[in-house]
Length: 274
Image (cartoon, rainbow, N blue to C red):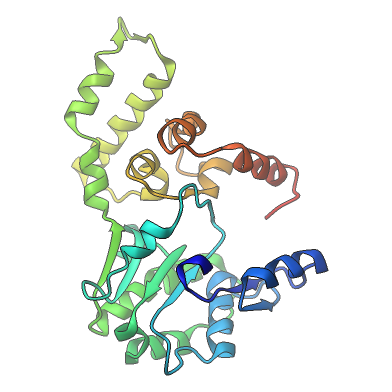
């Protein structure tokens, strides 16, 4: 982010950071804000926006990002260059129709028109440090997109939902079925893929909204998406059936090393990381 010419402010909800961590952060960050975990990510962003007085007169863009993803698995330069504020006022990486239409909040980028809109000020003035995560998801994660759209601002995703679902075509399904012999697969990985493809196509047909960062993780990575969701690998809450070969996809398709992610996962399982 800093290499792209952006100033980075690191906000930690941990309450404190050791001196080694702070020294490393000072090398790459314009500021460090330490706070208690009150209000989750939206509470942290609200505090940062207030303390930094954003937007300032010279502010051209504000990007909000959180640590709910592993990565970047690829350099972010191409992603950041695609943030075209002549085409949309607010960009997310992915979009979802779960609950209501919204840009998923792990990465949101606001351009000049959004930052100076009444909807921006009104939304952040409404954010309260509530302790209930479901409330935050409904009111703030979904709510910020809805509030910006009601304010006349255009929202868009770099990886549109429909583009991802169209990748799971009949041809993909047919190729996977061709690997099946008498109800058994030569390749068990393909058995899991076939099951997931069938689930996706069934959901599309029945117009059941999916979470693209979970259900469509493979399609995202195959199109250069630079992240993979932590909860998908740690908890797999939506029971995605084909995530077992994520390391192969990261290594073979993206040319990235899955080792650091595996290390973080082991720490999580031991209770050594959030």
